[in-house]
Image 1: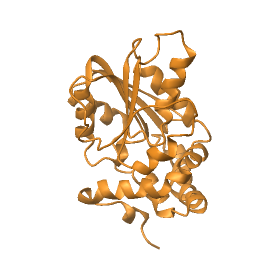
Image 2 (image 1 turned 30 degrees about the horizontal axis):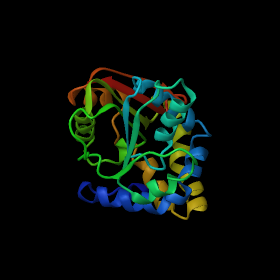
Image 3 (image 1 turned 180 degrees about the horizontal axis):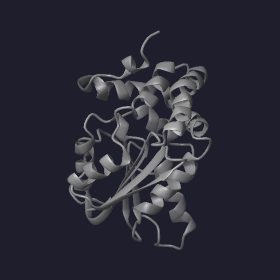
Length: 245
């Protein structure tokens, strides 16, 4: 049987691989997110927006926005609050145009500017945003430290960088159940629903070499962020990190 880790691209090929992969899974991406997380991913995204701690009239950048779930959550929150209490502008950036196009009309009446670009070279001046967030992106970049450095660059002094990611649980017994589900069931379900089993083999396998939460905190600190903290969710399988520039 082929080693599933063989789907992991080499660093020089990773950027183009990731763009192609998200292009082909775009039509089923939201459905698979709901299924893989048992519907909990929306609650985690709400937590991300809360942790961004946007000031009234603030500006938010959602890096690797995908179909826009984080950006839409910020916009919904702005509409639900008193006038002038929400973000003045939300911007979404993604490497895969197909993902952004897929999400552009899924919430009629809500819209935000979209930018096709690379998380390692954000097309914005220094200090543009009050907060920068990402959801399930860091496993897909070639250089995690460089990605955080770019996010720290475009956020203003005192602004926040918030990261939502999958992490493997530390407990040996639960890790066995997690691995059985994540590395065994997810590729099968993803293959059946999207016809792209390779993509849903890559996505779980990308967690194997990903830094654990404590190591990711150190990377964020090295990128110039202070007061970096994290909390775990879903029995230690999801981590939310945040820090201040």
